[in-house]
Image (cartoon, rainbow, N blue to C red; front, side):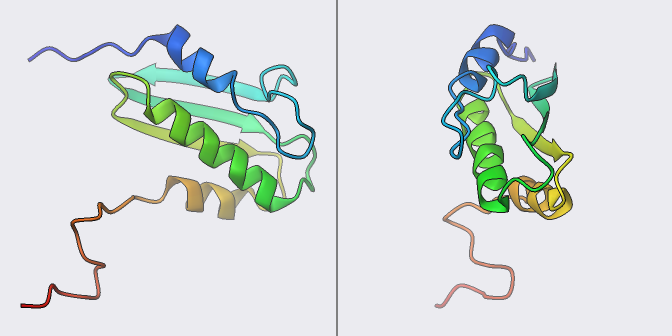
Amino acid sequence: MSSEQVDLREVQRQISKIVDPEIGMPIVEMNLIDKLDIKDGTVDVEYHATTQYCPPVFALKISQDLRDSITQVKGVKSVKVLVTGHYFADAINRQVNKPVSGPESPPADQSPKQ
């Protein structure tokens, strides 16, 4: 079984489109990306917030934008995004990396009606 290779340049291109919603600049231009690893279709990206007290809503938006844009790259099976240096980093990282259930599956505490 062959596994499709993830194009590093395409991942970098997607990341370069992410703009800090408060400052209005691409996060790549602000040198916020600290780590980018790709292995077997899994992409791990780590970045730091512009300040420790960056509004959590903006840090979450950047994290979600990273996850969503990298997910669109051909061959990507999963994405893990970590923000560091932020006072709310643990909560943001949990939120952005929680498993997503598909629309066809009911919530865990409900069973389908028959």
